[in-house]
Every structure is written in structure tokens, then in C-alpha cells.
Image 1 (cartoon, one colour):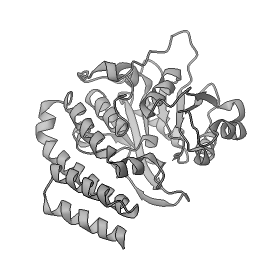
Image 2 (cartoon, helix red, strand yellow; image 1 turned 180 degrees about the vertical axis):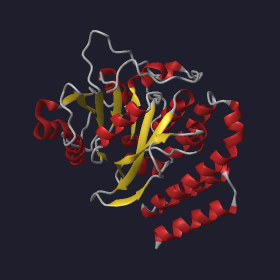
Image 3 (cartoon, one colour; image 1 turned 120 degrees about the horizontal axis):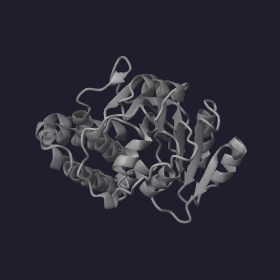
Image 4 (cartoon, one colour; image 1 turned 90 degrees about the horizontal axis):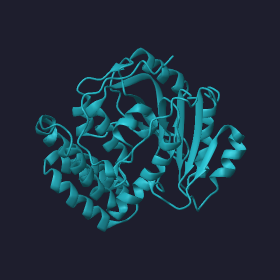
Length: 336
């Protein structure tokens, strides 16, 4: 069982502008603490919230071991509290923002309200696989030096069909080597798959409130500078991808590539220079590849200006022939 005496060791604090990453206060020693805080941020996704809650409640450890909070960013198109009341009754605490504050500030409200030793952020349209919490708890018990553990994510569509998955970092559960370099080069973690000790947020602050996309990637890079990460090979999480979600909307509007460039500047302010020198060119290539995978979204929505704008962003990162081969191939496949 996880205890306060089994703390991860840190490897130095990134020089990060704290004014953009709100402090997360430690929990008072006099307060009762569950092992788990499951934080479920929502915004206009109540049609999926029941599935999200059920995937957690099926693994409910009881209120002394697990607190469950739904934090709603002032939804206007649906009624998440009615879903919470119907599915979970008073087992789940519901917090509603008085106005729309954006993803990062909504996440912060959940972190501020949390009391658990292990923090799991689970978007209101995502899910966890069977035995997720039991398996993750075992990982932290086995590797007390770890600040975070994550597992493989399955991409699921509106009909819960699996359309792909993230990479499998290890064949067997364990700590990751050279993880800072890998996560610096490319985002490799979807939020529902990762669990962090609360003290990681207490030491580094919450999500960067300048960001409306890629805030998770920046958080994982910041944490990887200071804490060991582990990969859990024995469970999965489900990350939902569909045409109406915020990722698709920000790609079409052109906002997402601009925020991506902002994230690169932010992390370069605190990632060690030797990592930047070694991995900078690889990161630029990976960013270009990521943007080629966004092109089919512009094609499927019949937005030629968005497609051209994305091509311009790709060119700033890489002119490698293979990058452009993938760019045009994916676009043609989407058109056909």
C-alpha cells in the first residue's frame, strides 16, 4: 500500500514561469486522504459521460480509498449533473464553473479540490480499461521512486470502435530509460492513460494556463525533467476521437499549429541544453509528421484554406521528401 514514506526522488526543478502554472497546495496533514483522486473534467460531452463514469465505478475502491470528482467547465449544450446524479448519485462530487474558464483552469480546479495521493485525470468522454486502478497502484508500490506511470491508449470513435492505439513503450512493466528525450521529441501519452503522484503537481504546479492545446504534453515534459516515469504494460485506457471534439476544431481553425509552436518555446526554456542539441532536429521532423496527420481532417471538412495553412506549417519544420510523401498520400486518401 502506498504511503507518504515512499516518495520519488527528483532530478532538479525546471526554470519555469510559475505565474502561468498555478500552485497546487499540499493537503493538510490533519485531513483524511484517499489513495486515489479521479478527476473528470467535462465540457459539453454529457452524451459520453455515462460511459466514462461507469468505467470508473466498476472499479470503485470505496470513498475511503477513492474520491471521484466531475469538474464541469460551464457546459451550455447539455446537462452533466443530471448524468452524474442518475449514474452515480452522491458517490461522485460535482463541481461546476460559474463561467467557461478553459481546459487548463478547469483542470486546476480539480487539482485544488483533490486530496488523493495518486491523481488520475480522465476526460469526460474517455474511459479506462478493466483493472486500471488496481494495476496502477501495484506499479507505484513496486517502483516507489516513480513520479508517474502510464499505459497504452486505444483510440475509440463515437461508436466505441477501436481505430488505433499509442505505442507500447515496454514489453513488461517497468521504469523508462532516457524518457525525457523521448517525450521531448514527441507527445507519446494520452491523458486518460497516465497517473501522477499528487506531489508532482505540488512541486511543479498545474497545467500551463497559457495553453488551450498540448497542455498535457508540456506537463509531461516538465514532470520528466524532475521525476522518473514508468510504463504499465498490463492495462489500457480509451481516448475518444471524433469530428466534433476540440482537437478537430482547433486544427481546422489554424489555432492548433500556432499553440504547438508556443509549446516548443515553453519547454525549450527549461529542458537541458544537451537534450535540445541531441533531439532538436528529431523533434522538428516529428512535429512535421504530426501535422501531416492533421491534413486529412482539413480535407474531410472541405477546408482548402486550412489544408494550405497546415502545409505552410509543415514546411517550417521539415522539407524532407518522406514528410511530403506522407502529407500528399494522407490527403489523397482522405479525399477518396
